[in-house]
Amino acid sequence: MHGIQLAIFCSQYHGGGRIMKKISTVFVFLLCLFCQTVFAAETPKKLSVCLIYKVADPVIQCQNKEEDMAAGQKEFEETLLKNYSKRFNVKKIQRMDENDIRPPKEYAAMVQPTEIPLVVWVKLEGTGVSVDHYQNAFGAKVDGVAPSTFVHIKEVTVDKKDYAVYGWDYGRQEYTAGTFSLGRVVAAADTDPRRNAKNAIKAALKDVCSVNPDINKYADPTAYAIDQDRFHGYFRKADEMRKQQKEAKNAQEAPLRARVDKFVAYIHSHPELGVTNLVDANRNDLSTMSQIMEMYIKMGLYKEA
Image 1 (cartoon, rainbow, N blue to C red):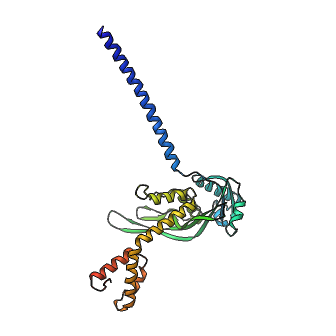
Image 2: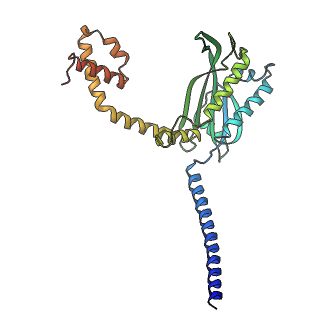
């Protein structure tokens, strides 16, 4: 009898264990779902935009060897859409001449009520050369030279409430196909001007439509937040955060800046020290100026009040 009761008890116990296991599984699943929802909420919402791109004819012409403008525009717009769709919900895309300057209100009038205008400038800004250095197992060195292309991209959005304009200027960036080495021969990977221009534009668009991989989210959360807002087109918010960051940095550097300014004034009043040009050239580099100042203090050539 006791054996039967024990068997029943064990059966109930193991059955209860299975029930608890199922409950635990459901709990973990719900917890994971909740976490996913929370983390997803941290990602800024994709903005619906009308992408208005401003380019000169050479940007379109370099898309194909025939320099066919219609085919080139189609291919270029496909490249734009492929990249900008990572960042925005692109509802419409259209070209404007790069010299067509309009007030913000007109751009706002060009889009649907649920969209905002995203204006993108893509400029080819000349060519240069890129040098790669090679060294063989015996220590012999040789330089490889390849043509490079400079691309400049700017983006702005127009706030439809007050027609304020906010944007991001990526500056003049250099791109090259590089060089390759075959034995003692070093050659440029591609010397065709059209292909180099086209590929430079594609590389530049890919870069601006990517998050900055050099920013550590955990070590520098502010820079990460700014880049996320930049990536998703919240330029006004990114601009405000950059201003706050700059103000905080200026406040932190203010005591050292005051010391450096006094040191610079002293150097200018004592030209016999012969470092006026050095000081003027590095005046805005607080780190370098601090080192120079400390060196002069240790040498007894300068004494702080």
